[in-house]
Image (cartoon, rainbow, N blue to C red; front, side, top):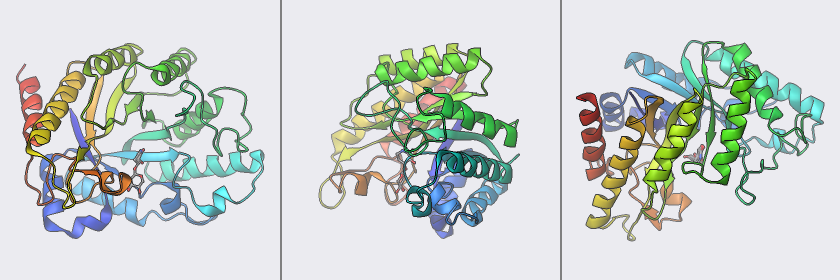
Length: 322
Ligand code: XIL
C-alpha cells in the first residue's frame, strides 16, 4: 500500500519536516512545484530545479513519486493565459509541455495526474470551460472529453511505463460529477485510451463524509480495471484565532481518516492513500478558509501525532494482518 503526502521543497531543510516525511511515508507528491507556473515560467524555458529536489529526496529515502499535474485551469503562468494563442498554437504548447515534463521524469515519476479537475462545479457532469477545452481550447472543443484523451496519449508517448491518472475534486461519492467521470473512463478503457487510474482528492469539510457512497464509488471505478488513489486527503476543522481545534473534533477527524482508509483498503484496486501535506504547520486549508479552519492533517504543528495519525496507523496495521 502506498502512503503518500504532498510536499514542498522549501521545507526539506527543516529537520523535523524531513525526518517525519522519510519515516512515515513511502510516496510523495510535489504540492505545487510541478505546476505550470513553477515548471514552465517562460514560453521557451522549463525549471525543474524544485521538482528535482523532491525526486532526489524520494530516491534517497526509497519513496515513490506521484506527479501533479500536467493539465489544469489554475496556477498557469500569465504568458500562457494572456498569450492570446490560437487553438493550433495551444495544442503545440500543451503537447510540448506534457512531453517535456513527463520525459524529464521518465522512470522517476511512476504515476501522473495528467488532467486535474476538468469537470464543472456549477453544472455537475459537464466539462468545465477552460483554456484547454474551449477558451479557445486545443482544437477539440465540442468533442466531449477528447481533449483529455489527447493529453493522455501525449503523456503515454513520453513515458509508456508511467501510470496515467485523471484527478478530481468533489467526485469522491456517487454523484453527477463522478457519474460523468465514470462514463468517460469506461469509454477510454473500451477504446484503449491510456488511462490507468482515477484520483479522488478527498478534501473533507464540515466533518462530514458519506463513507458508504465513497466505498460504492471506489468499487465501481476499480471494477473498470483502473486503480483508485486517494490523492489529497485532509479533514478541515473549525479552529480558534490561535489555530487550535476542539478536542472532540480531533476524535471525529480521526474517525473520518479511519473510515476512509478502511474504504480504500477494502478494495484491491485502491492502491494509495495520500494526505495533502502532513503537518498542520504547512497546510493550504488555513489560507484557503481565511483561517476559519485548519488542523486538517495527521500531525500537529510541532510534528506530534494526532488522533488521526493513530487512526490511520491502526487501519493500516489491521489490514496488514488480515
Ligand atoms: C493547492 C496547494 O496546496 C497550494 O499550496 C496552492 O497555493 C494552491 O493549490 N486541488 C489540487 C491541488 O489539485 O493542486 C491544490 O493545491 C488543492 C486543490
